[in-house]
Length: 434
Picture (spheres, rainbow, N blue to C red):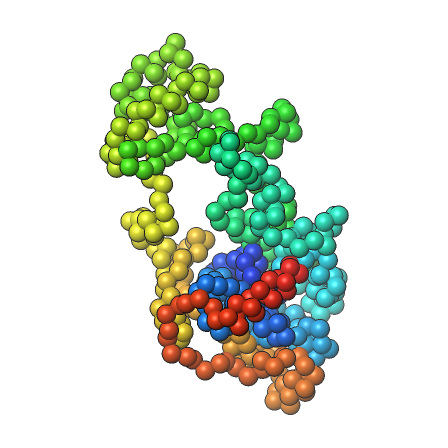
């Protein structure tokens, strides 16, 4: 069996952070049943441009492979009945909504424990379910600013800078997955479930790590460093060669001794040189770094990396995305995987970095909206035809109760159609509820 093949998760999720956390669990074999609100067209991620057509987008494919989809309107009594019946036969209710929403729509442990005492309710919200900001929507960009990340990032004389990736969202997804698994372990051991109150804000603050510890205990005031230099280890930063940029870092004294030799100045590593120790180099970095910069500009990136690799000095090129995808190590680690999609044809994307055991992960395309209707309502919930019709008449499934849409011929990914672009913009407002 796959590591999580005996786990069933009801995922009331949308967009990025929540689906990113659960996709790794799905890759590990968990049955993730994605609940999609039918009135708004389901997960807003389905409509994110520029690479999308209709209800399919490469953005959605990235975060939702290996999952199941059910259109379900939780605001109706009939939809609520279906949800509660699924809770009875599931292990986890996982959501990423605004902090006050889980209680409003009754998906916390106190709301569900009478149905399943061992249910784990993991809520990944913007700011948590308590505190003065709990009712605010949380977005990665806002949180990178609020938690101090942008103040730490960029050149000293430049503006505050966001990370090129949505790292608060993605880190929050990982934190939620860890919390969920810990809660599940405890519930199976003790027979009692719980709430897991996880937030993007907590994640972002927690990732300040040692600079925050330094500040709280020694009054450290972080400052931005030129060329992404490490705040205390010198040299450890980006350097410009004659044809591009690369990273070199001396995290141990032995690396500095080797680097001094490689750049033709072994005397720089000697005691008394002013650069012979961590403390010396930190104190005299304003004179040392310009000297190194002058040396590194004299040769190409490949020439320097060849010597640095040979000397076992930590280093590497500064790749663009294309170069990172072409790296030999990317291929060797099996990080590029494919799925087949009726609209996009063969879709290539990235494997989960979560590795458990020797069995390779298997990848299935993301589901069409409501594709798994029969599997979920008939096999898992156990409804007969008459019950399904009564629930449908009660509005449980909205207008999307017929599974699945017929496959369409493959077409090249393109910009979203104008109507879909407008729908995506409307979806942004819906996504603000998380």
